[in-house]
Length: 290
Image 1 (cartoon, one colour):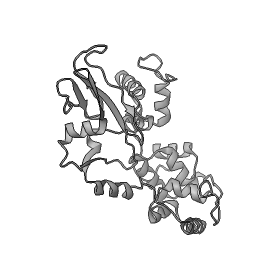
Image 2 (tube, one colour):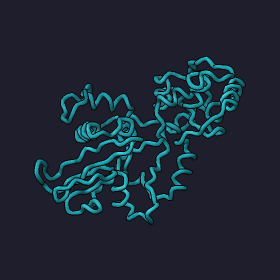
Image 3 (cartoon, one colour):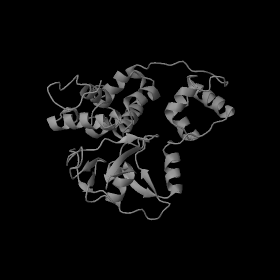
């Protein structure tokens, strides 16, 4: 499926000088001292994944949050002064400032979204940690335990393997690298659906206790061809235009996370890393990472 065309709109409060795009980028539209029209601003991280840019007007620089600029431009003004911008994605990536990923919420709605998608850590008791380990030792699935206790599957994995809560009791599991025939068709379908929804191969391989290379072959349809579930279209996902390669490098240089770029351009994080480091598409331009 082709990606949507990038749409630009005036930046609220800076309409004559800057624009913001549906992909979450900020552009200077008029030249000035030390800069030129058409320059894409490089956002700066401010913690928890949020990004900011400095907008200059009348020799004064104002720091603005990128997600609020985009939401105001594409979703209108905030309903009231208490409204917050919510990132709708389920993985907590605050650098994904695409317009279709943003919405206005009340603080209560924002908090509930974080809890529903396990983006906010819940505090466990020692008794709960022991219970998690005991129930996993009785073959209860990590994904079911994560839903029961309101934490991520990765946190469950760290607990049962003894990598977190190291002084708590309960049986510690040994990491088992599953072979292909140990996965049921239902697990294969679940893996493909979760990858299609944006979950990374690293998280999936940890959760299903298989090698990341095996997870890669499963979501590609190279193995378990009759299991069902959405299989990655290799032709659609791997062919990039020259402009897209340069865009990936430029946005990575601006601070956009490689995992976010991988999801947007339908690539693996490894493929994006090779592009931004210049290990692939070596004849094309754009800034290279060290």
